[in-house]
Image (cartoon, rainbow, N blue to C red; front, side, top):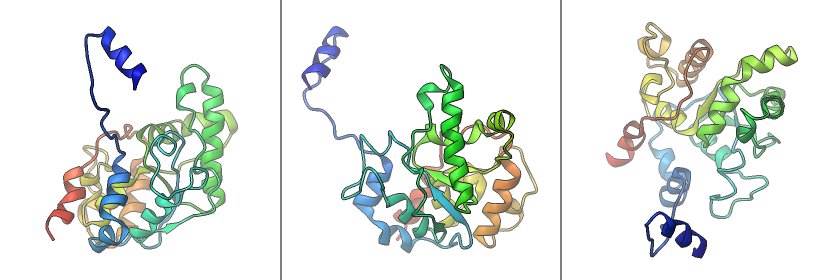
Length: 228
């Protein structure tokens, strides 16, 4: 705290009490709980096998009460909560995505991403979900470059956890921020049927060319919880 005050002092700023900074996942799990969140699922994501990729920075500074830093289970529980199939044995769940090296040493960063994606495929995952926006961007957008470098054929969608919740709560892929703007006529737009088919169709057809997703539909996420 002393170091923080000293740094702020140089900029002419002061702080008396350090605010309690929490990740949104902490708020959802610790304040609402899995049982409460599950009550509002109207379209379970049945049949979708998802690798829960926590990453390193989201887990270590924050964490969730009672969770292991080496093998956290909360993301697997969230996947299960929306009706999908988690992969608890996914061993790359806390591996760094190499975000700090993406520009300075891209070959090292992409080698780490390769391990993350390869492990997900080895465990039969159809997609990867993460609570870290930087991990979402890195693990998704560099797959094409990794394919060129290593001769792989990676094409697995990487989603933010709240996107799965929006769809499971009855929202469309567009409302969840997963559907590419301007893309019309997908199964998502025509049919709000089985969630697993919706996700699989949309994710497999819209991943290429989609910009990294940093902004998500929080209104769609919380509306079901506010309308009990």
